[in-house]
Image 1 (cartoon, rainbow, N blue to C red):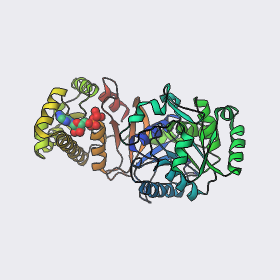
Image 2 (image 1 turned 90 degrees about the vertical axis):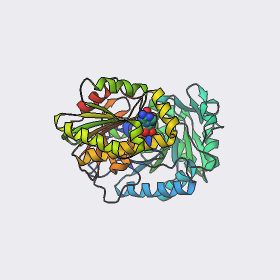
Image 3 (image 1 turned 45 degrees about the vertical axis):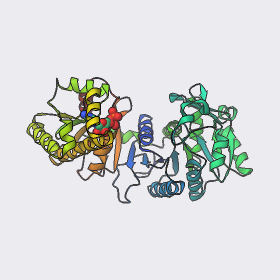
Image 4 (image 1 turned 180 degrees about the horizontal axis):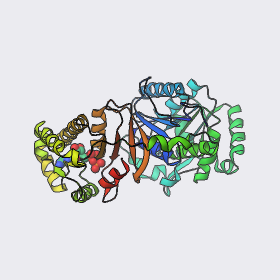
Amino acid sequence: MTPAGKLSLGCIADDYTGASDLANTLTRCGLRTVQTIGVPADDLDLPDVDAVVVSLKSRSIDAGLAVSRSRSAEKWLRGRGARHVLFKICSTFDSTDAGNIGPVMDALRADSGETIVLVTPAFPETGRTVYQGNLFVGSVPLNESPLKDHPLNPMHDSNLVRVLARQSRTTVGLVALADIAGGADAVRARLADLSGKGFGAVIADAVFERDLETIGAVALDHRVSVGASGLGLGLARALVASRLVKSDTSDAISDSPVGGPAACLAGSCSQATLQQIANAEAVMPVLHLDPDQAVAGKGEARRALAWARERLKDGPVLIASSSTPDEVAALQARQGRDAAGHAIEQAMADIAEGLVQSGVRRLVVAGGETSGAVVDRLQIPGFLVGAEIAAGVPVLRAVGASAGEMLLALKSGNFGGPKFFSDALKLMR
Ligand code: ADP
């Protein structure tokens, strides 16, 4: 057990969705985890958690900026007692010869005084495996996968030892599957050997989850590692196995009810969300916004809020802008695609803000962009990740929000079963 308040694991994620994926993975493995939006303020009041995932948007920005933001995130995490920091990257190693994986790794290595960094993007559950340093996406090497045509980071080389060497100032080696299969001590011996020869980083092969568990156990001897959610899983399992987490206190804190009025917002127009809205009609009042009016001005959001305020005392309500593909196309033709999307997102953010001012403390939001707009508007600095409502959609408890205690569920359009809204509210007490 770690002393109260001290983090067992600090993570810096190079994009928001990757951060949520990692936070969800750590939570499923038994770590109490908070995901923050950006580097938190020094005085952010955190519950007693095992891990914090700081979400940055640093994957495709200038390398110098990615380095400085990652450095401040690391400083914050170390300040909260994190001994080990995982730099979370994409499982397809999205980067260019200019970075940003190599430059950020070099900076974190230097700042933490680490000699050799374990690096692996493997995540077998999603088909990402590494063998002889080559990354496979399903059954094909990275450079034959759709990533070869990625608009920002086209990946033309599947050999990650070469890819990382081009981005880093240090010499990059390989810990091959034969060493990993030999267990943690074999990996430690190989790392000591490579470190003695001046290597500063290694790509670690991993094909099965047990390989990630071995790598995770060894990585904990070090100050920094680089990997995707798969390495997060390896680190989390190693922490749980060494009893370095506070799992025995989790239920008491994360399950305490928040109460208060509940509301749902839907801005996704996906098939799944349209079906979920239709099913919600049977169990709660549903208001369908007039999308043209929502684009035209603030009046539609005010109308929705007045409608909601009359009903919130009697139970949850749902407000949806969602419409069918034909109607969406027609609105976009009239208003322009980006303008329509942005205006509706802002109307949803206005409604969310008004609902919270009216006392709503449990809020379900459907739609990725819609959720982003709502969270930004509510200025929520972070979330404690809770029980899973549907695959990949956990209950989130706001941390440091000005509105105080609050539960949210944020789902991207296609996620969740047909009764998602009532499923979510059942878990959000
Ligand atoms: P998803 O997760 O399904 O992609 P998003 O919220 O990310 O959902 O994206 C949906 C986009 O569609 C948002 O920009 C939203 O504002 C916009 N939108 C919502 N309702 C409508 C509508 N009726 N017509 C056109 N666009 C809409």
